[in-house]
Amino acid sequence: MVTTTPLEEQLLELAGSVPDPELPVLTLRELGVVRAVRAHGTDSVEVDLTPTYTGCPAVEVMSLDIERVLREHGVREVTVRTVLAPAWSTDDITDEGRRKLREFGIAPPRTGASSGPVRVELGPTRSRDGDSADGTREPILCPHCGSPETELLSRFSSTACKALRRCLACREPFDHFKEL
Image (cartoon, rainbow, N blue to C red; front, side, top):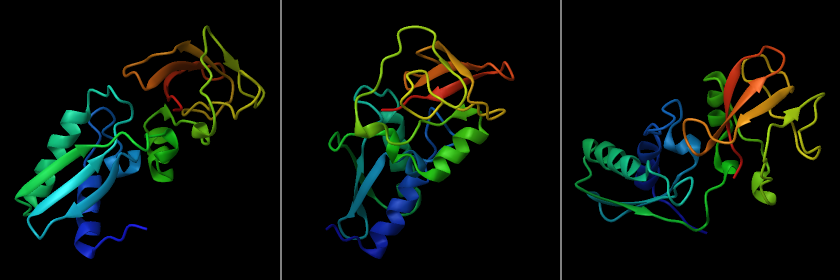
């Protein structure tokens, strides 16, 4: 069991308060990518950051933003380490993060995604009558009206971690944060 000091808890809270550069409605804590902070004295800190996926282009921006915030709070030396194991999962997104995604118009990832393989959808799929397209998982709900009747328009949206979907009830398009 890893124990943290009150200073490390405070620094973890500061590092976690940084907005995600691709989804600024979420903080890095809510996204679940800031894993740990280790203080070495009062002016040197090491932060563990796990990207959402290995090639995530936002890691450098996240690292610089974490360094800036901690330096603004008196830390002179900040090292941000990219840590790939354990791998990040969409299950790491907090309940608050999921709520914020929904309010922002993005369908949050379904829970329990890390318990098995991710199904690859090859063409347009629809979720109807409270069932998912493959019949095994909860449906992707429209963040605008809550309908489970949605269809996949594109496996990729504005970022690689999101898919583009459309609600069949209200006809509004929306992003869906894909499960990993």
